[in-house]
Length: 140
Image 1: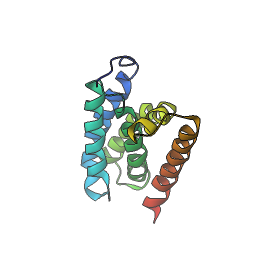
Image 2: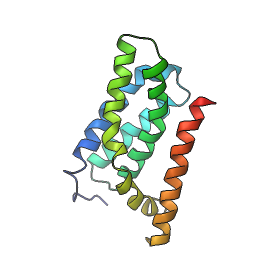
Image 3: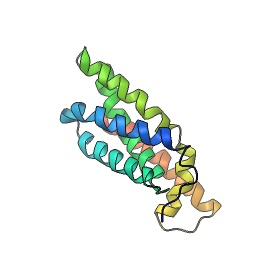
Image 4: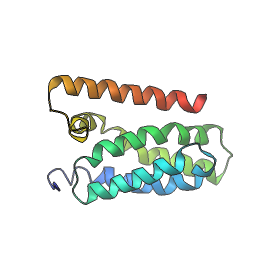
């Protein structure tokens, strides 16, 4: 079921998610998971635009997964236009990353679990694990 409450609040997350997915695709050809994550980010942004509340959690997870790849391109990539695109992509990922708290509230619902304090704590630990993995994986 769609939900239009909070849709205005999610407008920036949706817009920047679509833009960052589009910007990440040219950078993604040399990335190990870039095209897949950019596609997931675009689909989740469209799903939230259609009113699906669960999409915020997927957008945040996709932003977390895409950030290390794009960050490496911004720091160590070739100069000029590709570096500027990587920096612009990072700027477009920020609103999604700032929605981490809201993603924690949606993740138990996505997983089909009862919404309890214990599930919120598990979702926080899970997001922390995803962050650690997303930072370490590109370095390996």
